[in-house]
Length: 114
View 1 (cartoon, one colour):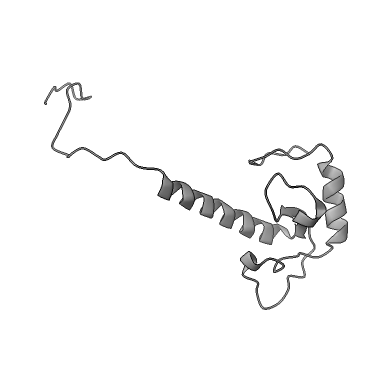
View 2 (cartoon, helix red, strand yellow):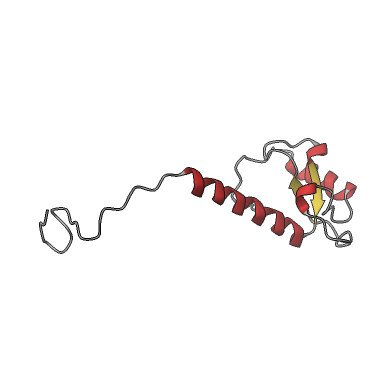
């Protein structure tokens, strides 16, 4: 199986064995075990089929991993992506746009106003 996702850090060479251990330990989806899950009133009873990193993405110790169903892993990944995008949006400074009536020489329409 070829991994095609975009990770911020690579998985270790023994990831297959780690993944198997977590999915054997966490038979059911562990959604709601973290405060940031905003747990629903009842626990998800779907079979855990994916492994989620609770801590940093390069931390592969068993205590920092949990099994999730495909749906909840997508929810968590989406939230992380949205939070990352917001961080970038608010830290990156956009250059100030020039006044729309001001044109520099050499514009694509061939004019050289200035």
